[in-house]
Structure formats: C-alpha cells, structure tokens
Length: 422
Image 1 (cartoon, rainbow, N blue to C red):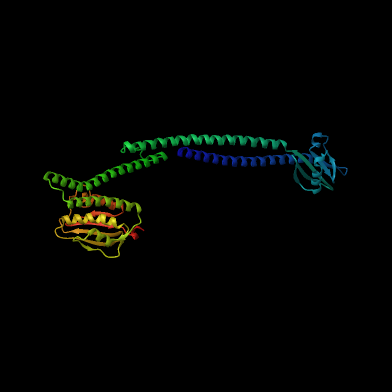
Image 2: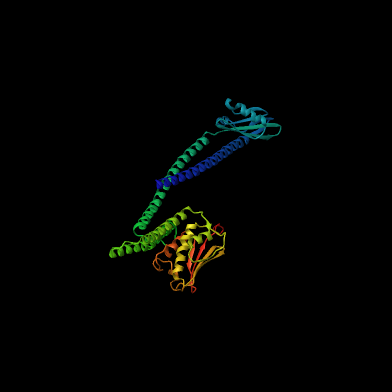
C-alpha cells in the first residue's frame, strides 16, 4: 500500500508538472502565433494600401486612379478624395467604420468582425485623400485554431507519455528498493553478517545500500548486545540460585532442615537483583528524573562502615534507584577487597559529578583493568548485581563508569547533572 501510494504520488506529481509545462507552452505558442498572424495581416493591409496609393494622382484638378478597373480590389480597397468615394464599392456592413476612418484623417487600424480595416492618408496638393483597405482574417484565425488544436493534442499526448514514463521509471526503482529491503530483512533474521558492500556510493541506490549496511550492523550489534545482557543477567541470578540449591542438597544429605535465614538471605539477593534490573529499565523509560546524590549514596551504603565525603545539595539527572544500583555493587566489591577501609568522595566537574569509590586494597591489575566490567571476570560472593550489569545499567542512563589502576582500589563514576545535559 505504501509503495503503491508513493508511486501514485510521484506519477501524479510528474503529470502535474507536465501539465503545467504543456499549458505554459501552449499559451506562449498561441500568443506568439497570434502576434505573428496579426503582424502578417497588418503587413498585408499596409502593402495593399501602398499599392492602391501608388495609382492615385491629380489630373485636371481632380483626384483620379491612374490604373483602375480591378473589380477584385474594388471589394477590398476604397479611395476617398475630399470626403467623397472615388473608387471601390463599400459593403454596408463596414460603411460606418470606413466613414469613421476617413473622417479621422489619420493612419488607423480597426477590426470589424473577421476583417481588418486599415486607413492610410495620401499627401496630394490641395486635396485630402484617404485609402482604406480590408483584409480577411478568416485564414489567419483558422490557422490559429488548427495550431491550437494540434498543440493541445500534442500536449495531451506528452502528458500521457510523461505519466507512463514516470510510472515505469518509479516502478523499476521501487522494485530495486523492495528487493534490497527484502534481502536486508532476510539477512537480519538469518545471516546478520551479510552486507551489500557496494563500495563508495555513486547514486541513490549506493546510498541506500550503505544505509542498509549500517542498519544491518545495528541489528547485528543489537543481537550481540542482547546475548551479552542475557549472559550477564544469568550470571548474576545464578549465584543466589546456586547457593539455595547447595543448601537444599546439604540439608537433604545431612537430614537437617535448611536454615530459614539462609533461604531468606539468598531470596532477598535474588529479589534485589531482579528488582534493580526492572527498576533501572523503568527509570530509563520514564526519563526526566533527578535526585540528591548524597541521600542516594547513603542508601547505597546502607549503614556499612564506609566513609562518605559527598557535599550536600548536589542533584544529579538520574533516579535515586539507579544511583543505588550502580554504587552498591561497587561498594560491596570494595569491601571484599579492602584491607581496612572503604570511602567515597565527590568532585564537581563541568561534565557532571564524579564519584570515586576507593579502598585500601591491592587495587586492579593494570593488564586487566579494561576487563573488570566483563561478566564472570571479577570474583565475589554474589551480593547484589555484578560489575558487568552495573556497567550496562550505568551506560544506559548516561552514567560513565571506569576502573583505575593506581595501586589501590578505585572506581570512578560520573553522574550527569541537569545543567550538563542542557
């Protein structure tokens, strides 16, 4: 439906443009032809008047025609001397107009019906002589009508051909686009690694091929990202489930009941992981949130022995739940590896508020610092979310997280502020 509608709009536009062009050409050609025929008729009238004037002379004090007796000219030319007709027969249908032209005494042209009347004065001593000629405009008008009819017929054929050509060309182009889109769709589902690889674009189809290649790249990356997310979530949820299964098997072998505290603890860990993932996703969807960073950091510390040096009244452009989801695993990681102390500091930078989670442990291996946030790389007892999911949640909300190898444990988190986003 969309392709048909697009093709129909293009064809309609082509027909509209062709119609406008043809209309302009027909009007212009008709106007030019009218001017040419008017000029021809006027030239014929002037030539005819000059021919008659050349035969007018004065003899014996009277105005006479040297050569006369041409009955054909008598019906189309008339000579007046001193207000009296001396040659020709004036039809009654034009008598009034002829008298008016003669009375004006000037060179004039007028149209009566389908005839052109032209009056020309002749200078003769002591006499006022006027020559009036008539030119039949019917042949010229017939020629104009025929020319207009032919122009309209040719214009209609041109408009029809323009519509047909536009339909064929657009149909062929859209067929290519449809085939490319079908291939791209099929590759995206079954062979995400396939590409058109048309090289440097030389035309619109080359641009389309490059665009579809980029689209397939995004599809491929999205699929890979989805697989990584599944692996990371599975890794985070497996730990409390494994602990529960281990406790259950141990109780089965020993004949003792599973301690309720152990079950509740692991279920709480599992529930915390699921709730955090869902809450962070919901926060990304809602957007436009902000929170007090110090208050959220205190929630992440949750009463543990961690020093907090974050100034008051510092707002960041993310939800408090997301701040807790990012900081809590980093704090737990610091507590696991610290020798005696974990502390949190804050720095206000132009790009946002930088939180440093530090501990006095051995820190990160410089060779492994870039892989700290990969699933399964960092060890631990499975409390909360792992660093891989933390990295993903942070990136989705515009929060930058990076580990720094400086001899001690240090993770730098940059939260955006409303001013930095604006």
